[in-house]
Structures are given as structure tokens and as C-alpha cells.
Length: 229
Image (cartoon, rainbow, N blue to C red; front, side, top):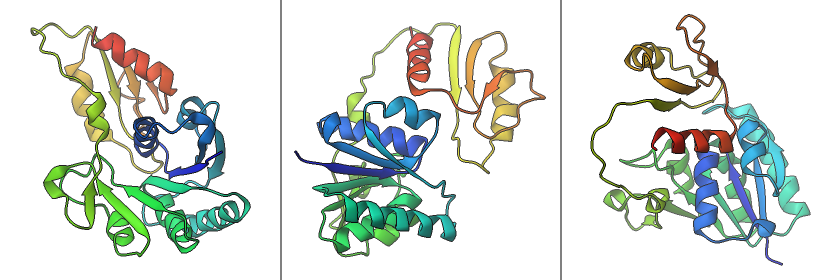
């Protein structure tokens, strides 16, 4: 049976790579994941094999090296037909090792990068054996190929304007990156609205809302569906 390794940070990087794995139509039983452990990974990756990586803040060298050691051990222990990553730091830890071992390595830049590659992407694009992809045709070139986008699964329907009764407000959950000014601006705009707040590491104790650092994926998706119904 074929086996494919998916490597990424948590949060949005994980959500994107999960969506891309579905678009690639790789069966669940052929997927092996390497990502930091958290509420999102536990709910989103149920039924899949998962190796827990260390949390690696942007440009933090020590966690990057620790994840590289975990990746080296994993690549020696298991056989993979290909490795995929949407970043961020874990891609730098493991994709070069996979390429060095002759395993096809694929880096898909985040959909949040609408104008060009990230710092991680710029480094990986210079390494032999790592194929790099953009999710936007506008900045695709010989090095960055357009290979599709997560937004291809979404469809827009025109509906008449209507009062907002329910809403979901979600921000990144990376430790050390609060969104204080964002919540200070948004909370007054949604007064009287039923809101599910995923606040990450932001302290919202003085804003009069019930913030949750992380919401399970299934609950978040269901709340978004209810907010648009």
C-alpha cells in the first residue's frame, strides 16, 4: 500500500493541507501526518496516523532543528511515496531531508500568500528536489507552478442583504501572536449577535465576550454553516 507524509504547522496550515489532501484524493489509510498536537489536529486527523512535532514559532531555530531530528528518524523508519507540506517551519525541517533521501517533496504555499512566497517558501524554492507550488495564477512562474487552490471547493451564491443573527470570529492560534486590536474593533460591531469566538492566545477578558483559545474543527465548521443559513 502506498504511504504519503503530510507535514505542517497547526492552525491554518493544517486546515489547508487537510483540504488539499482531500483534493488529491489520497485515501485516509495512506496518509501519515506530522504536525504539533492540539485540539484541531485531534479532531481533524481522527483515524489517521500522526506523529507529534514540536511547536515551532516563526524563525525559531531550536524547534526547527528538533523537528528535523524527529523527521530524520521518521523518514528512516517509514517508507513514503511522497511528502507534502503547506509550511511553515516544519516544511524547512523535513522537506529537505525527504528530497535528500530521494523522496518526491512538494511544498504548497499558503493561500494567505496572495502576492508571493513566504520566508519558508523562498528558502525551499532554492533547494534541489523540492517542487514548489502557488495557489494563485497571478504569481506563478517557472519555479512556482500553479497546482490548484483550496478555494476551488467553494461556491458563491448571491443572496439579498439580511441582518446578521449569528457569526463566527476566528483568528490564528499560534502562541505569542495575539490579536488584541482586532478584537477591540470587532466586538462592538457584533453587539447583540450570537457569536462563536475563537480567540487564540488573545486576552479578551475585558471585552465582555466568551473567548475560546481553540475550537474543535467539527464544531467550528458547523457554527460557520449555521451562521450562513
